[in-house]
Image (cartoon, rainbow, N blue to C red; front, side):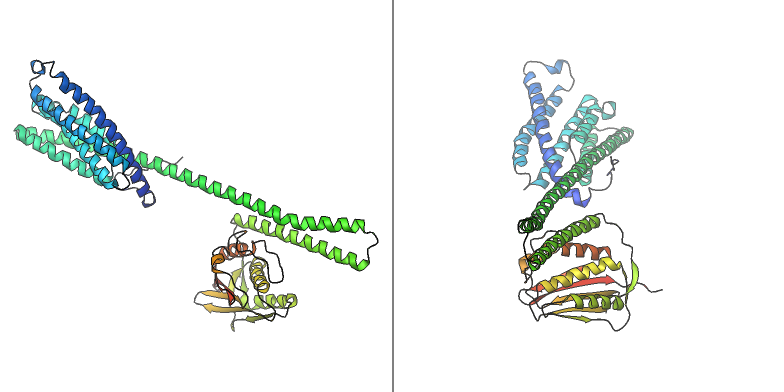
Length: 446
């Protein structure tokens, strides 16, 4: 549970400010309607009763109290329908709604203050109603710091006018002023504490809703992953089942044919194994574990990668490496970063036609090293590019020779590059080719 942060002299955090303002504007209008209705009823009953009861027999200044009640009655009568109208259109008139609430609070406090003046002509002898009005405004309404200060200034001005009309001595004016300052100070702190409490509650609700959305998103993603995995695993297992069934039925099958079936079974096993390996890699990356890296000479490392790929490459495709002339060192986890390069080169091979060209270029750029893997293949359509690095993305397509794609390779590559403190971007144009660019920080040599 988070502790309550008090916002005495500052506003709500920017990320919550707008939503909180909209929320308390609606709440204030709702409270305003309720308060106006209650005061309209109470003052209405008082005014009505004055026709049957002669309050002048019990009170010295019954006429002044009558006019004060009439004033509050009329203000409340106008306020209720206006507040109802503003509540229906508060999004268009959020600022006006708050100003209206502040105005009503000032008039309400002033009306309560008037009772203190009317009672004995010297408010210090009876500030109960003034204090009650201020406390009601502080508790019922939520005001921003600016609105609180404006309200305090207006109430102070009204109080000063009241003192002037009462023709008090200087000593009495000073004592009354100190009393008013004390009451308004209490109003300020109570108002700001309530503001802080409601803001804290609003932020907690927002955080809980954000967590719920995040959990829902994760749950949906897991369900989608399970669906895709089940779909992708079904095909190789179905192939294995079919091939094994055929082998068992055809016991007199020629050895060459049997060998062909065994090769197909192995391919299905490798496909399933590759999918499982990708899923395990993805799960490991989601844990955000820190990589153990070592300083690696990029030139030597890429020479090894080049040698391995020259052995793998088929279909008359060219793979050219353009390596730096000087030694460049980067902090790498060799096995995992080779996985990145293998994924990107493999991707280029899949979507490059025969006699196509795949290039790996490395150069130093300030404090970074840039590695570009480019091809002159079929490229990636513009509408798919934004999905390239998402797991099981819509951008997953079969290669030119029917190579299957689960859609995890590029997502894993991006996460691995980011774990190395780098970034990866893509540029592509249909039928022109694709370029992946990796940026990594150079290692500081001792």
